[in-house]
Length: 275
Ligand code: RUB
Image (tube, rainbow, N blue to C red; front, side, top):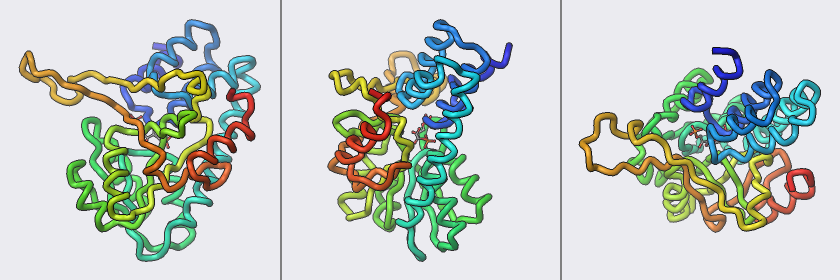
């Protein structure tokens, strides 16, 4: 298996996970092989990833030259998202998060570097348990972390001050697509007046939704949920869901902290080439 195929395998198996990591891996893959078939293959691996599609669109005219520019965009954005988001965290807070988002981690890491003393409640994130990655990273950073099973989210959110989550896609109607469970958790957070912030690079905006295109939601292999399930039991393994903008306090991106509607205007101003 050559390096390009190895990257594809890791994206498909969610060994490389999270929208930004997937986009960066696709940029690196394109620096190895840039033809229509390879691009189609990369995009098909995770259909709910406009960040990957946008990054591919940006680098494909000249991957060797533009690849490093795209990768630098992500590095610079991560720093800004961390800076802006960390200001939302105060000493003594409990921050709730779901799944594993590198942009949420940028915020949590920066708050720790800024000397904030706070703790994190994270979910397990069935079926692939990405919450363990979050918990391990937090442990390594010396941030106290408690993991809840997904169905413990209400109890965890009741005692949290902030809910930080990532994004896989943002539509022109300001809906944020993120790991399944995010909207349910945002509804609970709203019930308890817990601030709901989406931490995201703005290249996750999907401009094609302006023309009515629906953001696809990836449906994964039922075996991830229940290997060996009895025949006849249907399993719906939706990877993501759309979060209504009314539930989102603000979107924290490299462009600043904006309510969802304003965020869309800012992205279109900053990156007209996104469409
Ligand atoms: C990951 C997930 C993350 C977003 C944002 O899902 O839902 O919250 O992708 O991640 P999966 P990031 O594990 O199925 O890829 O902030 O790293 O872009």
